[in-house]
Length: 284
Image (cartoon, rainbow, N blue to C red; front, side, top):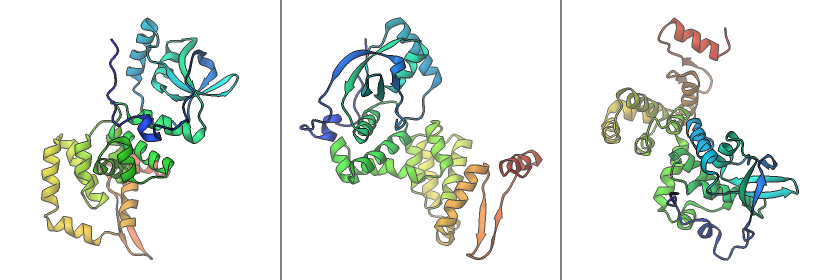
């Protein structure tokens, strides 16, 4: 039995309007898989290889249960709109053809459809949802409040996801790799500086802290003098640069000084760690 996915929003019709005629064409046919090219604007970037191979085995045994969606480019070429996992798994299982719905869609319309299909999936990580919401806002040229109404979510929910995009790259990677949950990330967002966010993130991973523990830790930190001092004295641009360098070099970078001179402190644990950093800087 095929499980029906529970939509995260109110669906395509809600986003585009019930009277929209953009996607009325709904031709169904088997298409030569070699005639389909991937969508470079595919919002989802994280595909689990083990799960893809498991899906490929299922497809080899049972075939494609849910068709993919494509648009026609010319007589011999189609472009994928949604169903990338099924498409990839079908190629792994060496299918010659694949069932597909063919829709008429321009470039910007195709991106909308891919994004909408993407946020209705249940197995997206929080950052993928955040990126999809951001792209929808940019693509549809609407604000958070209007997007919230169209997808049937509270504005605060949309805002909480979008704020994830302001976290340092290291923490964003942690979300993608499922090292931390949305609850952990929401606590980190409330911390004013990138430096402190990275400190708490590191402590969180080392001690395997629960969401509740992280919330308590952040609450305690906000009351300490050292935390308030870091908030009041750190330049925002310097914080961003520190966070980027720390993420790139894998160590906590400290930058001090003014607009004309200063210093960058790059700590290392041992000789091997120093050599690793020097290699990243292309010095040795």
